[in-house]
Length: 221
Image 1 (spheres, rainbow, N blue to C red):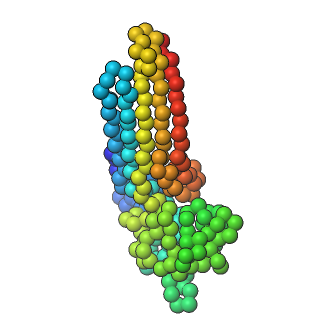
Image 2: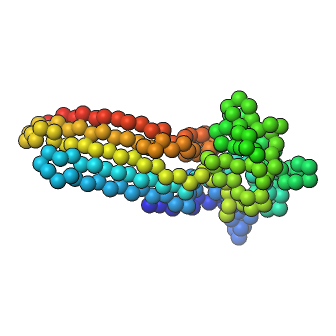
Image 3: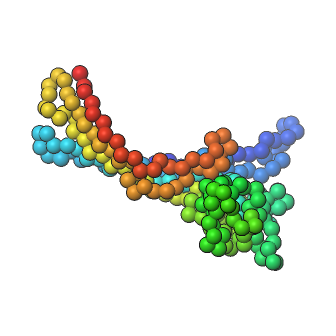
């Protein structure tokens, strides 16, 4: 298990005695994640030629996803604040979000839905605007209106659990010197549809591996 607090402080200005970060606010960079863990359980079935079975559970609370649009007009340490170039707007006097900073495909990749209307790879949210209270996603976690803070409460990838399973026999024919082995593995056996990151500064957007089944036959000498 691990927890990563990746806080970036803007560089200090002036000389000795200057305050670190005095020229700006700290923020979380894209590999910040509060908690993740991997649990592996393996059992050898009794018997001379019996196989073993393995099960793997991976949980991630979600990496920082700073490019996710949100609404905040009060916090100076929020990239959603219009004073910082953020997308917060007013729609008919109500808090709204301008989505024109994302292409339709990027809106789709983030899983954005506005009042039940989902973005597609070719058609984004109608008008590229949505009330803050109606913008949702199953792939990313959007802070509630007025709560986003680049250091304490940034947008994140939605938390997820992934499960893998395998079964294998390390000595199929009970050989002594030369041995044959066979392993069957299922990755993401529930076929979870989830993001790993979104518009990461250096690596872009990635989804988790979809369900994959593999067979491996080995000869050991």
